[in-house]
Length: 92
Image (tube, rainbow, N blue to C red):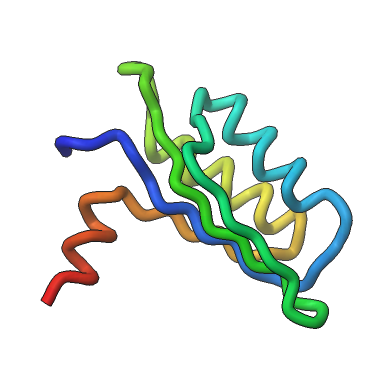
């Protein structure tokens, strides 16, 4: 892959601690938030982030597993797509 950036989407019922939990796991894996948007629609929490990794020791499978685990704990769905995959999926 030519890029080390990811699109991370989080969606679920709003509750205290979602941003803290997600960002904590990202920090533990050395993933930086390059851009972030978040909104609450009624009781629905939505967040999309452009995240980047600069360390060559980053392990995507372990990161995805940790993010899915915290998502389960928080009751939200976490989707992680490499920037290249995201761009190819949305190219016509």
